[in-house]
Length: 111
Length: 114
Image (cartoon, rainbow over all chains, first blue to last red):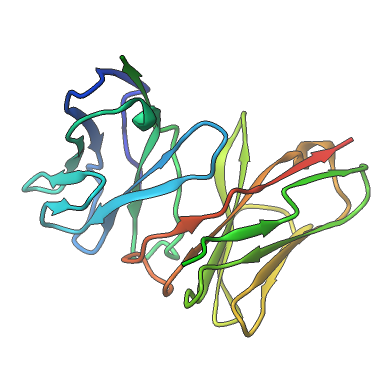
């Protein structure tokens, strides 16, 4: 199974940037890296995804290592609302396309 | 654009009964996936539908089934409920089927089996 490794928890201060790491050493050339987050008492929320190049959207940036074996989700200015569990998911072309969630990283944002 | 809607939001059933949960995807989205979330097992993939066809299925017993209609709405059914089926059931929709497409989740249906 394609797997990702994330720290169990991270802390950040409000209004500071946050870098959430993810290792996916088994990645192959056609696999996509997806990030979702889940706020308390809500369903998961799509954050960003990418294949090879770095990606930016209104929520975050995704920095993908040159060898693609790791990636980093960047929240440019953390707010209290960003406190959530962040999931890094590897979507594998030949694995029936399903999304397999790991334990994720619990981000705590301190005021 | 309205998000993914799920009905009902809360449900209490008795062991041995069956239950049907409903999901309406975002307008224009043709793929619907279902997930089960429990404190012990986390988020687990149940199945995914696209164009009324089940494209893949997770490791759940045959008591869990689903279907998708021509308007992309989907239902999942759990027969012969067990206490361990108590969970948050989440539906997600995406524009098309495939690993390049992001999924948008509904608020979930909280099922309690007593």
